[in-house]
Image 1 (cartoon, rainbow, N blue to C red):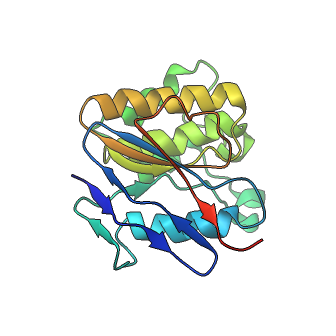
Image 2 (cartoon, rainbow, N blue to C red; image 1 turned 135 degrees about the horizontal axis):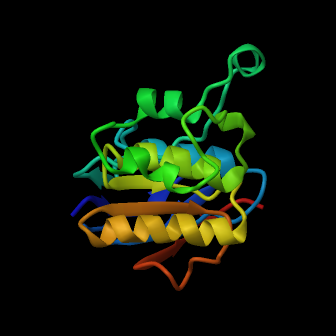
Length: 188
């Protein structure tokens, strides 16, 4: 057992109970709208164990696949390269640290801010998977084909003993996961 959720209730929403076990992917559908990011960050903090919730027991902390954000000054004068990002954020001994280079047009000196949504997400996903197989992720900024690719990679890792929670704003992965949970809004 990685996580046991007995139900999360706030003034704004309710998430029904669920368990996350080794080898499972849980999709939590948050719906798409103005509260998505705020709700996603709230849940990320709970499931990663950085914020306590009386109804959630975290037995194994999950790691969030962070979004790549580069300060404007850095982006203008010395943009972060793929190699630099992985050196700072990945376990370079892991095969995942170099898996991004299987894409023929991605190399160590390629600037991360020049990458489209899917390859950018893959860089951060591979960096995270190089350190852990228990993750929280989203598909923000990824096109539908890229969403399938990212989800497929996560599924491959989960089948080998990992676990994952997808915080999603679309219902596309409803039939692709082990458990599908819908957030219930309590306010309009």
